[in-house]
Length: 477
Image 1: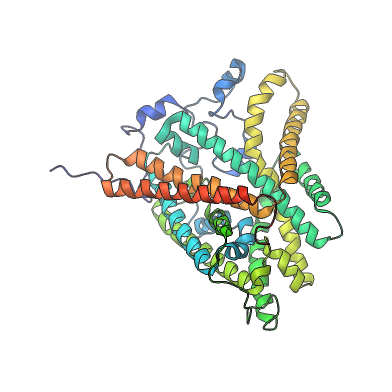
Image 2: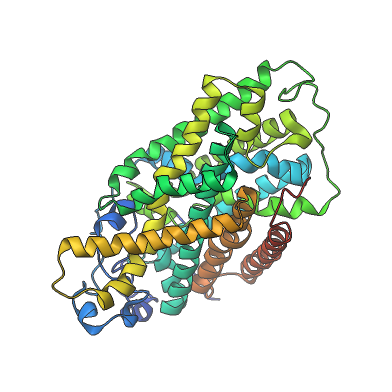
């Protein structure tokens, strides 16, 4: 009996394109002609996205790079060792979702909440390795959309791109709400809409910068903010006298199980912190030894999962039924002082430095669609920059209007997890891996992959329904 060939593993050597079973698929469409695999490339290039190329005028299409031209040379991103890549994974995963983890336990109870963190962490680690296996299957796959392109063609790539763009728009809205909530704690005499307007006024000028690399250099602020928050939370809980709000000792309001319908909110809140898969292909490409990629994910997810469980459990035990949607709102009330105030300001400034960067991919695609129709071919650089500023201002205004309508941090975070993270973290990687390797997979593996997709879709649907049902207020009050 002929032996069944084995699918590529996440750390396998990348195959050359000649003779690849994906040859026909890649010869028909661009595989990475204009999709930036790192922020630096996205900030520097002005090429036309292959996702929307057919919608542009002929003159614009003719002026862009060839669809067969790779964005990077094969060795352009080499150089990161094991610990460099691991730190990058941790930096990508740990973000604003950390703030709502204690509230997640308040919604679900300790038992269910910690189980969700464990299960989602293991599943996200597994699907990250599936992406690595897809990357190893062909040397021309260089980004997340490339993986979708290889499996489902240009239509699948466009759908994945639109999904990512909507996710980025929601993330920008969440940033505005987070800044406004934090400012409201620092300046409680002002109304929430007024502070949301202040947040919008702060982030808007950053979207006009021609060189966003200056903002990307401030990404270290996110790491500093997260580390400071964890240390401050543990210090406050350790030093607060037993029995008082904010103490790790003697708080009896924390519950192991809950008996309300709000538990479904915890689905999105638990998963959003493990969503970094759109960046994982770039991390894979940047490694000196891609064979270490699975180990990088193992260490990164173990570190992040442990931190998440620690913050969630400590924050919920400290404040119990009084746990706020963002744990920083509780901290300033029970532990006022310069240290807590400093952490609050890092929480305010960190989203301000990320807003323009997260909005940038959406803005690029809109500019590629609109500018060829509105700008003469001989337009000056100043005129081009002015129109880009107008378009980015309108996009930013859109996030501001949406944030005014739904100024609920937990709702936006839960939506990011339940709708977008379930798709980008679990559904898409599993389906792409199955499509690329289905001829070599055992039926048990196929059944497991499709079962995981089905279970994730069900959980995600429950999370989205819970988010929409509890759209206007704190559901636990």
